View 1 (cartoon, helix red, strand yellow):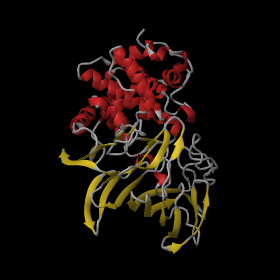
View 2 (cartoon, rainbow, N blue to C red):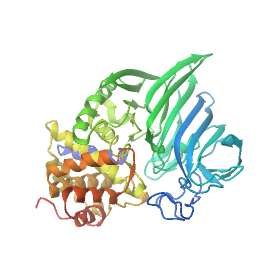
View 3 (cartoon, one colour):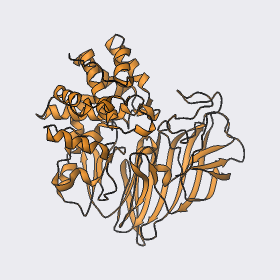
View 4 (cartoon, rainbow, N blue to C red):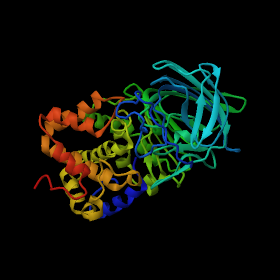
Length: 478
């Protein structure tokens, strides 16, 4: 993600010649004793920053999601079928769901009892699901979706627009429009059927799987075959210019709102070219489709790396601005964040630090400032402000999850690592990280362990200083 808060940093840096880029109440869901996922202590929530999100009692594997949306009434009707596996014996399971009315729930085809807690749909099967057993949950629901407010980023989730809607946000969005285990540690594959009035476009993640029109309604189908964290799920409905092509044999889907200049389409058309350059540094592109969506809604002051199809707010291209840097950033997330996904939100620097560093690599490769010059600029420019260095990117806290230090000091950490181990080991680390942890969840500790294995030496002090010390580290080149 690139948020509006980084745009201010971008403006400052542009002046000095640098083009680098910038609810409901809480219910604590705990892990049953002896059955916690890796990295989660028995009896602990999935996430220390957002303990209300997710249920560690099961692991979702796939969602079939069918929704019908009417922009005139803002009414959404839906049905999901979730396939999952119980971590331990499961007498009760919880799905994250904000608002909306549930009319029926079945577990393995048998009606189940339901209740609502704050932000949760509580499901009690007719009989407990045995430990290790696979099971299905079917939920039928309807209502007018509402977004939720998050610190720093305003409202996230499902938003109604004049001609349609979009669902977008971090750390939560999906649970505003369908029941889901809404935590990045539970990645699953998805199949979408989105029915909207004829003439409107409906875009989701993954490869297009066909569409048909009947009686004034069009059903758009999409399929994401690689595991995806729920915050990366998107839905965009409205009057969009839709461009479909192929790149390296994979579909490329670009949607730009019809009210925006056509020049934006040409910028998004570079997605395949940009992904190819990133693949030279990070390894093969990890998904079965490419693309991007540009919204016209001024409420969206950020871009988000929604899997295979990033979504961009309009400000990045306003006035004919060159948005290449933000495309680079969000496409880099396809490796760092989407394919390799954090297990807990505290490790968000593994997403944002590397995506920001990708901008620096791109800048240098295209004749701009070198990575070293960019590092020094941040070191002595905005980064020299004392408050910047008090934010530890390795554990920024939920109120500073998207602080500029997570992005910039995160990228500086990456460069400090490069200077410490040398280019050969550094790029070997990048390739090994994206290869060995593809489609998996990770922690900072996993990354440090891999770095030390490849480099053949202890790097604990380096990461302690750069990720966790509340002071400016020693410049690695001096």
